[in-house]
Image 1: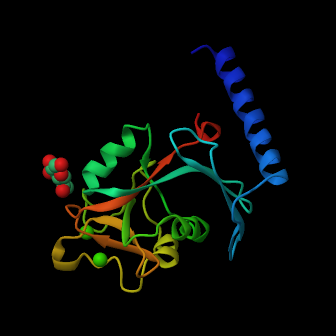
Image 2: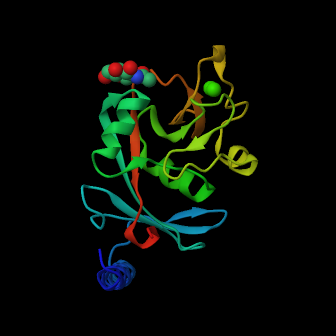
Length: 187
Ligand SMILES: *[C@@H]1O[C@H](CO)[C@@H](O)[C@H](O)[C@H]1NC(C)=O
Ligand SMILES: [Ca+2]
Ligand SMILES: [Ca+2]
C-alpha cells in the first residue's frame, strides 16, 4: 500500500469514527456502563461481522467485540474461530472492559485471550503479546485466581458466577469473546 493510500485510509477511518461517535451521541448509544473510571458505551452495528464497537469515554479506547454463544469450543479452536474473522480472543485489561464483558456474557463462561501455556505463571494477552500486570490481575480476576488448579489451568475465561476472570483447562469447551483491533488503533 502506498503511503498516500494509507493516509487516505487513516483519514477516512478517522472521519467515519467521528460520524459514528456523533451519530451515537445523537441517537441510541446503547446502555452506558458506569464504572469507577467513567462511562463506557456499547454501540451496535458499527464494526462488521456482527462485532459491536465499544468506546471508553475516560480513555478514548476503542474496540470491536463479539460474543460467540452456543457453539462452545476449546481455547485453541476458539482462537481459530476468532482469527477467521481477522480477530483475536478479547483482552480484558481494565475494569471498564470487564464491565462490558459482564454485560455481554449471559451464559456460564466465555474464553478471553489470555493464557500461560508457554511459561507457567506468565500470562500473555493474545491480541498483542503483552503480559498480565499485577494491577490487571488484582482488578479483574476472582479471589484466589488464577490458581492453576491441579497444575492444569493455562487459559483464562470470564465466569458469570464470579463476574470476573479465572484460569481453567484449555481443553474445556466454552463460549468465547473475539476482539478486532479497530483500524484507528492499527499502524
Ligand atoms: C481442541 O479441539 C481440537 C479438535 O476440535 C483438538 O484437535 C485440539 O487438540 C484441542 N485443543 C485443546 C487445547 O483442547
Ligand atoms: Ca497455568
Ligand atoms: Ca482457576
